[in-house]
Image (cartoon, rainbow, N blue to C red; front, side, top):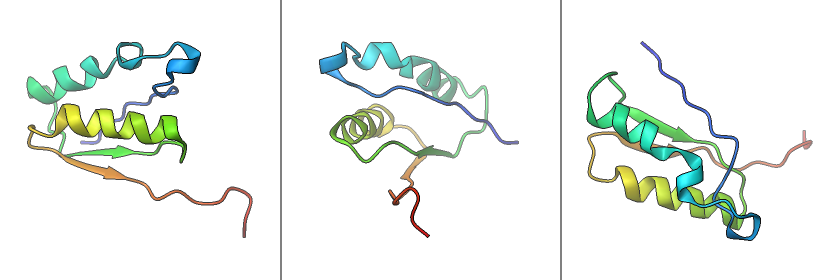
Length: 80
């Protein structure tokens, strides 16, 4: 069974977006309560300071849970 969650935002203090605005608690609740058999969280965030900050925050929040966290390597859009 696959389970998917999407975020369309990253932590960006300049834009007034903090960790609470990302609703990471929803993911943590699902991981903690065993509602699904999530084995891996895959992050695909922009290769920016905000994307890196968001990835670090998510890694930090799930580090003690029995789930693997992977990050998709950044690429170059439009290059072939």
